[in-house]
Length: 262
Image (cartoon, rainbow, N blue to C red; front, side, top):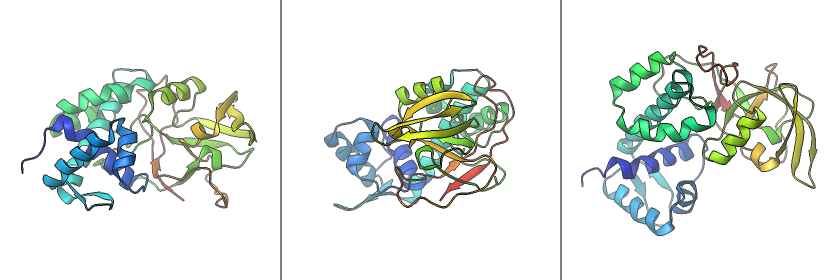
């Protein structure tokens, strides 16, 4: 069977790869339906189409896994998407919360040569503006470890490595609070009754819900590590350290390094 139309398969391949490789999640129809905001019946039909095209492997009641062909296509899609984000943010100065949404359209028209040129013009960053690593980027970054903000100890200066980019409202909230990659944050108090975390971001007071905080990956700014907590409010993820500049300076060259989860 021929490969399905790109506009149909791109969101699926992208989401499956991220879930498998960056969130270490078991991929099924339910989680795809939630992430893509599509009806279960629609997702089930598309999954069958992808399986027929040999882009995924899926047995009844088993996990959805990319084939080699599917993984290669997914990586190209993700690279184009994250290169487009970096270009929009660093070169065109798009608002930080909006680049993920705008890049969804731009990446559809990118071919390899154009993506490489846009990446070069953007300063050849290792990550996109949300701290996600850009596949196929030359240079091996230094490994670091990170945890969700809510799993970190109190009173320690932390650097934001990566934030979730799947929820536009959450990105808007992070932007208002200053919770962007490269910024410094500290937890002062966690109210377990209300589920609210009180702290500072770049010496400015902030409050954030525990659930939202689980979407912000951080590491100690001094490079030291604390023992892994016995109970985690959220799972750790693979992420990348973003450059230290604030969002208002998108054109500053990247100094980002990748990190791996604990």
